Length: 240
Image (tube, rainbow, N blue to C red; front, side, top):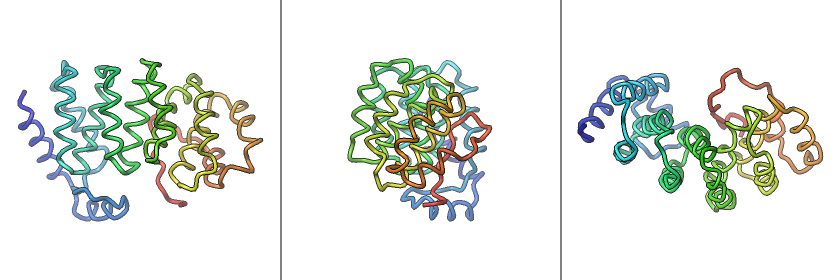
């Protein structure tokens, strides 16, 4: 399997199925420094699924090489495909891949890439390897707010199912509750809302004594109706 050829094929299809108008809008909306083709998320996911169907036995090392190649294109949609491939092949990832994921998260600089990486890739990896929780502990105090957001969102999938480490989330959220950064405030509320799907009393008891410290963004997000989708929900900055 030729890496360059596969990446070129993906890039060509993304470009062909894009929209100039959508590309301009998304680049402005995301304040992105990347190139944008304007390819929709459903199309991006279908391309990634097509790759996974063609190469179902894709091994760990080949996966990492292809993700790196797609990411280095500095095209938003290519990076989205890389995230989708990591999601589709997340079972192939190993404990030491947290370093790779941290590098991608630091370079992502947008919720449109960070959220999928944190919730759909880092989350399952940490569930399989609980010892990686110390890495999340470090992220939760990092100067980069995208890493702090990722520490919160990595806990989301398990908490949504009624499992997970709420004690760890509580520790992170408590330390970030008075932050001014919108994406931190929204992430805390998002995780609380999704946790409340299975354990509303737990969330109520946690949030009530902290209402005076929590931002309006956090509280509104925590008590808003939960979407029906079980996948990661993009916290778009509509009410920033």
